[in-house]
Length: 242
Image 1 (cartoon, rainbow, N blue to C red):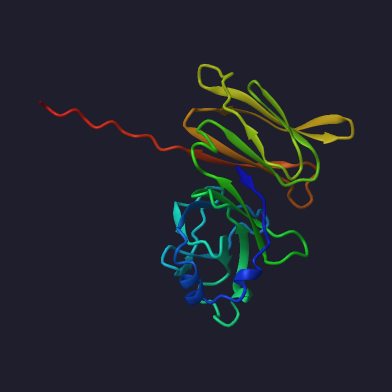
Image 2 (cartoon, one colour; image 1 turned 30 degrees about the vertical axis):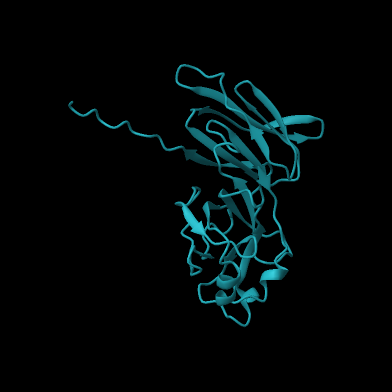
């Protein structure tokens, strides 16, 4: 389940750290893993309210998901700040990003993106339900950040990708003996479909992928950034002598 960017943060603009700790004392923390996707500025100093209401640094990993974090929603939204020391008289001055969190989501993958030209705050966020039911092992998600229509061919799947719409890719079962499958991405140029990425990928039942389709400054065609998530496996306990 994918939930687009929400800019409805009017309710939080007047809150100090003390106030949102008091107002949200019934709110349960949400478990998130975050990734920063900003090819022009690949590093960022961003901060989040942890489960105690303390604003702490979000440690991103380059082109990878962060470790699991416990974040305290603020009036039903996930909020990021550009500093840890927030002015209680003007918390909106430190707001870096916000997104409305659907109440059913308890675990989420959060994609942090630069804001569109002319928009504030500086970043926007997309939330992907990280539960096994909503994003099962073996599936992939495609996040298109380009205005042209694109498409994917992955094993037996051939899917169109609409601009601004997340596409779900079911598990790929048409694989060779090494679990490899041809995976091609195309973009529409006039009446023609032009490949911009052609490669073999290994598809495993314990692996999920997030493909981000984007364009770098001066590029003549889109490019792909891939976030790979390996699901944890349980190690069997050794048998004990009876």
